[in-house]
Length: 74
Image (tube, rainbow, N blue to C red):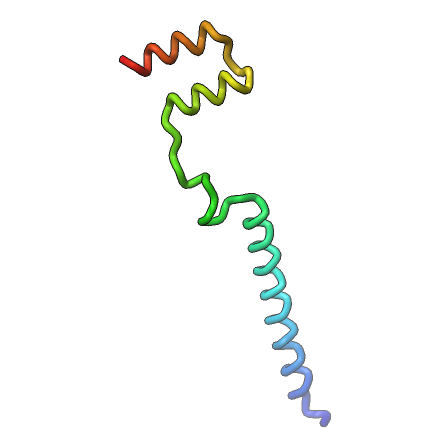
């Protein structure tokens, strides 16, 4: 009973518990942020689609949009 084997057994499993807990937390954070393999981040957008989104968000005005769109079409 006093040989210390019970301490190692409990301590070893405690390390496994904490490692598994950290892995689960990291997995949940990745899944919540959408950076997993099932997200749409892996699909590349065309330059025109990016330009349309920037125009829709108001990052560029209509004149800039038309100028860049014409450049992309050439």
